[in-house]
Image (cartoon, rainbow, N blue to C red; front, side):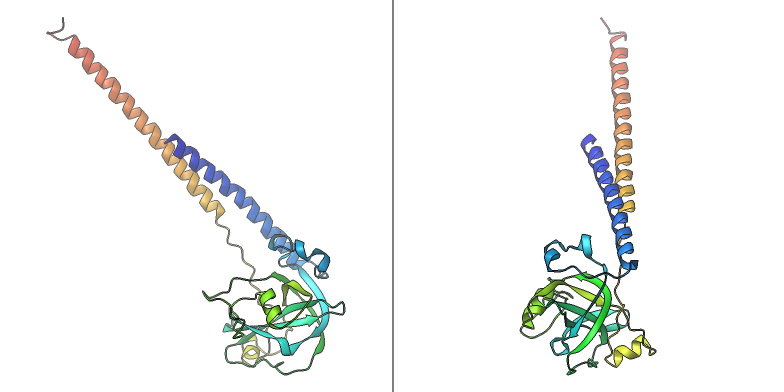
Length: 247
């Protein structure tokens, strides 16, 4: 029981540590999202780009949209079921960045389908590649069926080179039309990035500490009862020796 008690204390302390880590992460991401947009990480630091260090960084970039190489990625947003439109943006420096232009509804046709290459400036949030598929299904590059925004796989299928290892969620263009109407018409609706970090570590910590308290109380209770039992048994033995037949 002592080992169990110490184990529960250790788990509680670990959850407290995780709690402060999560609060720090939320604060860092909040600062990134609301900061003025900066240039995205260049090729010299691509190897150091991670979720902890760069995800949700507010960035600004410009280049030429290659609409013919757009990938439709299955999506479920607050506007319903549909697709993300990931279009390569080729910069003047030769770097290509996949840009999630936004969401269109299932059955809608991308309004830019068949459009010529066009210059554009994009402001949005840096996101990390999603290589493991989604919706319990794996990406099928051969059939051009995408269930997650797997940057290397999409880049390879589109024969793109010098591609950034991340993608950008573009901000919304704030069209006068409603988001639902635009999505149904094939006009990509941006700005739908969901930034949410479940933070249940305090509840977990209290649970582990509560179990430690219960274990400690049980240990004390059992020890006290055992002591009483031994004292009672000793008293009975003593009384028995002092009875009529003693000696």
